[in-house]
Length: 325
Image (cartoon, rainbow, N blue to C red; front, top):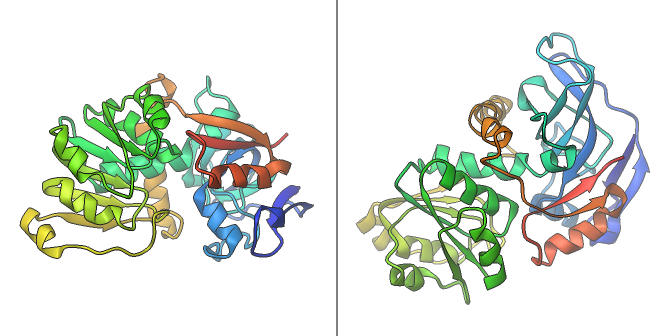
């Protein structure tokens, strides 16, 4: 199979298209002929040498999500057959023509959805739903603050909030991204400068119940400042830095819950649970058009380096997809 490998830690130029042996599924697994994958921040961090892959996936092939059709089924798998169109998450290895995954971690692609669209779904929508709804307990009538609203997770989060009857307020560094996010259900948008936004939240009279934080760093203290009493902050990303000052007195006064979460390093049983929740709560809304993947651009697999450069520039809105012929 063809695959993109990380030759050594470094810039986009270290991504190289090579030939690798096809992996074989073990008991309880399926092999997917990947038709498309997407670029995530974790891929860039892995390429730079700052985010090693889990031990159960290829160490040098990035890629956390896939869309394609099953072409081999391991022993003990009764629910899938060759030719079934599926998508899902994997700990790594999706920048390749084939990937092996546990059979209970894949979901069926809606008939009306292309592989390109499907590839833009898993990481964004699983992350947003798991963090904001499952862990943040966002419910109808509440308000969510979604940082980096122009990202894949951000665009998924505002759609999910609207679908469950909640209000979504988004932040971005440019007005153009906020304008685009309004098309997907964001009610109010705030341009953030110098990591300050709490006063602007107060100025629009918003009471924030849940914060989906994809930035971290100094955003965390601002989250605490603007969240309502007994508010929930769920930290998902650290693009703004891994450290920040926190006023614990304010946390105590408001009885704030601060949680941190990742998907990639979870044990298999938790990944299966997340996939089943995705299948039950998100896939039907994708099928009927309530939720839609947001794609900025599509590039062929061999241009993975170019895709990494573009994602790192923060210029995009939504996902960057890699097609695999």
